[in-house]
Image (cartoon, rainbow, N blue to C red; front, side, top):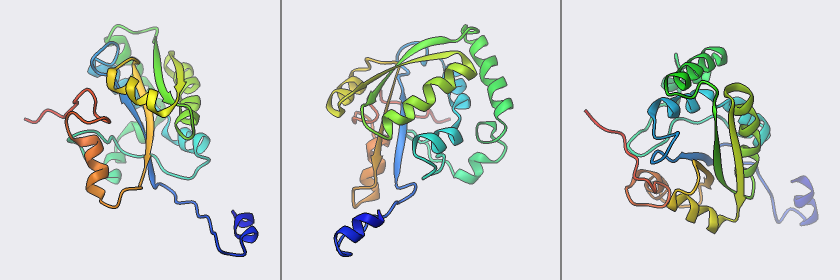
Length: 196
């Protein structure tokens, strides 16, 4: 970045904006194995978020919250007492128990539809071996261009999908609406938290 500034006599400056984007996994809850809430919870518990931040984005960021339609969680409240954000051994024990209860004591194989650029692909390349080692979940990474990835996301071709978004829209509501509304591209299976 310093070279860019030097090469342009200070006319162009580059800055790293930590945590200015979102990298998300979209679990296809319309087909096995993620049609079972226990498997979704096990996957959530099994993700090593700190490893993902350290390896896929070189430490420039922080683990986020469970960000899904109809759900907003305070990060500090979420982390308090939540083994997914602290005690890895406890999180993995609970995840393995949930997988056993769901009928997957030996794990399973799933496909991941992912954009062939970073940080989406680098995140997939960190998560796949980590989940294989920790939970015997064998993730077959299927990298593709952005347009094809979105068609796959919409059509539910894989067990889960991964794509990120940056803060490029002026209205924060537009960013949130990409995930929260029904019948939108980034909520293709119309997931929503049931109330009551």
